[in-house]
Structure formats: C-alpha cells, structure tokens
Image (cartoon, one colour):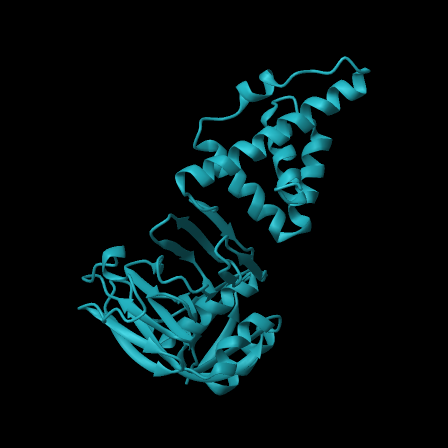
Length: 332
C-alpha cells in the first residue's frame, strides 16, 4: 500500500518541477492553479519545501535519478515521477527521524476581506480573519504560533505533552486544548475564550515549555487565567488593561461575515473594519477614537456602517478621495 497521500505525491512532483530553473511559465501557472485549488495543497507543499530546505536542496537528487531507454516522452516523465517519489520518501524519513512536525517556520496570510481556514499537522484549525498573518513553529516539545497581523480563531488539538502558545507582540497565550480568539487591535491585544481555559502572560512572565507540562499546571506568576465566556485586553507592552464578558454568538460572528462590537472603542472598530474595507479610514482627532459604541453589521457593508456611525455618534464622515475616509468631530 502507498504510504503517501495523493496530495503529498503531487506536492513532491511540483517541488521537483519548480527546482528546475528552466520551468516554463505554463508549468508555473498550472502550479499556481493547483496551489489555490485546495488549502491542503498549500499546507502540504509548504511543509515539504520547509522540510527539504533542512537538508540543503535537491539539485543533486534529480541528477542521480536514472533515465529510461524508452521514447523521449517517457524519458521526461520517468525522471519526474522517480524524483518526486524520492523527494516525498526522503522528506517523510527526515521528519520521522528528527521528530520535526510539519509547518515549522511556515507562514499563512489573507488579503483584504478574505477569510481562510488553516489546518495544522496536529489537527489544530485556525480561522484567519481578513488581512491577517501568522507564522507557525512546531517541535516535539511545544507548538507556537505568532499572530503577526489581524485576527485569528484557534481550535487547538488537545496534547498535554506539547503545550500550545500564541504570541502577539509582547502578549503570549498558553493553552493545552481549547477554542479562543486573538485580535491585534489599534493599541492592544484582545483575547476571547469560547471553550476551555487559557493563560494570558504579560511581558514579565516566562512562557516556556518547562512551566506548561500538564492540564493542571498552576497559573504562572504574572499571568491571567481566562475561561469560557471571558476576554481580556492587553496593552502592546504586555500589561493587562481590562477583562470583559464574551458572548458565544458574538465571538463566532466574524467567521460568518458579521462584525459585532459591545462597548468597543471606535479606534478598535476602525482597526477591524479597515481589514475588510480595503481603503484607509483615518481618525482626525484622538478623542474620536475614544468614543464607545455597540453595533453589529455585515463585513461587506462598511459604507453603510459608516453612515450609521455618523448618526449615532458626534462625528462626521469626510470622504477625502475614493480610498480615504476621515472621521472627525462633528461641528457644533
């Protein structure tokens, strides 16, 4: 029985094809189409590429693949198939031997107004919000993800032997298995828990594997524990600003295209909606950003939302140009 999946074999073939500097534009177009056809295609390909980079490339491998005496078309096909088989086998052996899971050092991102779901090799799923970026770094002792921009919802696979850390700026969230949301707001990090329990570590706490080996691990000094239905806002320096209740339906809303805010600062709302709007929304005065509001709207109705805000808050919406909007205090 073949030990490798069809996607793994296809990914290894593309790895061989793209390693050849003479790869045609048509081949590269077909590869782009294959990559975008399924999120699993990108995950497996990036994992194989990262693993192969650990042993310094594969140019010598292709040279060592024997050629067939068959007609030219067969000779071209045989080296590709053979090389791809060797690539996927060597990568599999490498990962097994050194215990390095897939996705080490890999990055995933979304464009403006785009949502994406990523499945990691441990079974964890991550829903990426619009204009968001993460990097993943797993080893046999721990699992780490950095939220570089935007928002992400994590459904973490339970594995007490490998705790899961999510960092955003100076803030680190430690979990074993749970479901929670992390957002990089205008000047803070928001953490909201749907299920389970997380620990939010401030800049002075040490998020190390040695201190997170079991479910019953006590809270670290300098950490704040959150359970289902709770959220916290942390400054960019890692200091806890406030805690707040979280409604389950609100936490899940953005993943279905709805943005919900309860007593939120306007600057945080603007930071969120800009990732869906595509243009620039400016705050003409810091006092405007401090205004609070409770609102819900669809992510594809940002213009409509701005009209509603202009009626509900003491602000006016100024359209500077086709892509720029300025929110200013309303004139008396």
